[in-house]
Image (cartoon, rainbow, N blue to C red; front, side):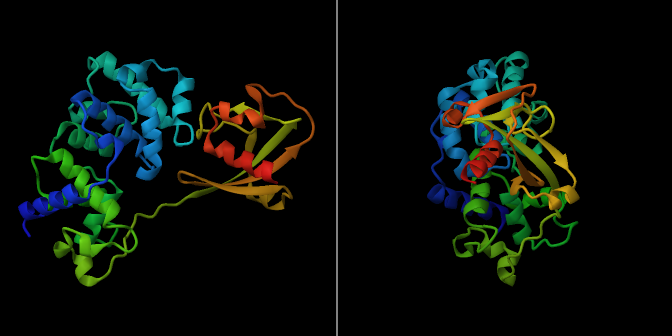
Length: 329
């Protein structure tokens, strides 16, 4: 198949198989731009199925850029609670303010201007250009990368580099339905060209795929090393209340409530007799020793929270996991 045929087959597959997603509704131009911005920020490092309920709640309470720029940080974080990577929410509010101040309230349709907005990089700017403005961009997310790696049978570090993958995007050709086309390619990666057990017989480009011809679907990924770090968390309890502190010590979960904790060395962690839990955060494996304290204490920026009242507070999943662990222990 030539590029034109590939484009036609991909769009035909998309028209018959695309998922019904809340940011794909029939919208006004203004709504589409806002929904695209919010959904693409939410989809950074988070799966579609996880994002859907958060997105619906978010746009219901914060329906446009003006309301996003004006919302209090507390209400914003309550809407984002549990979705993780909270800097995304803070950047989204900063972006709304900047758009209103510098772009007359209109999401810019220029890629360099988009990249000037907080939290928007190469992928997100390309996705917004394609989806919101129907410009001829193919965003290079993990799904698109996987298709290209299989189509061209890319295995070496050099072959799977971003530069090379960006060059290989020409495989897809162009379409005047750029918004649908960008989403179609990502959709194929998500639903058909899956990391394990790809559904090649349903794939519109399998005839062009070297991995399919070789029956070798293993994906070569860049080596990512998760840091292993060790911590000790102090649990202060008074009756049914637990002491939490506003985090200004660690870069992760900045300004959110966590249990008082400190980083320790591996040796101290191994010799500790405390209960332990493991939590994965971004590129970090956290091994946490739970240290129960019986003595009352008061720390700066601390709050006593009743366990029956926990739902009324903005707590990251990280804190909830530790809380669940100590309550069940």
